[in-house]
Image 1 (cartoon, rainbow, N blue to C red):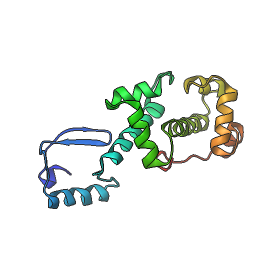
Image 2 (cartoon, rainbow, N blue to C red):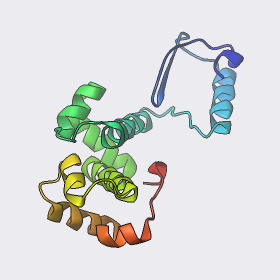
Image 3 (cartoon, helix red, strand yellow):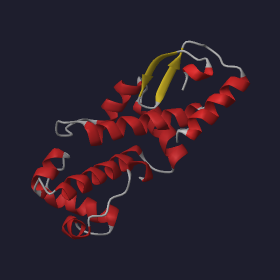
Length: 166
């Protein structure tokens, strides 16, 4: 897509593209915006929105695609990953999203718990361990608070939200 617009991407990673061009003409920027939107993406021109998108991408990757149990300090993880102090990240995220980073992380962990429950391969105890909950009771309480139902009730219903709707 970028090549069709005459742009040369240097690096493409989750949620971010680095172009060889330092600045874009308004017309080229508008073309890129339209092309991205046609593919279901959004061009983030606002620096705060870009930071929020980076935080979300890092949390989704951590919660959903990390193979090891989630034994990580979230503030240290995000600070090192985004090379910004956590206070700044937290402030920007809360202002833009009307939600805290911690609550967003909990929401993603609950979505991962739903995914694991729907597979039926792990016990609730194993899921709690994998998602770094101190106990099954803690996971169950947070699950009920977020979804309104218990993990057992969820297993009976098997309803999940898509990642981008959280």
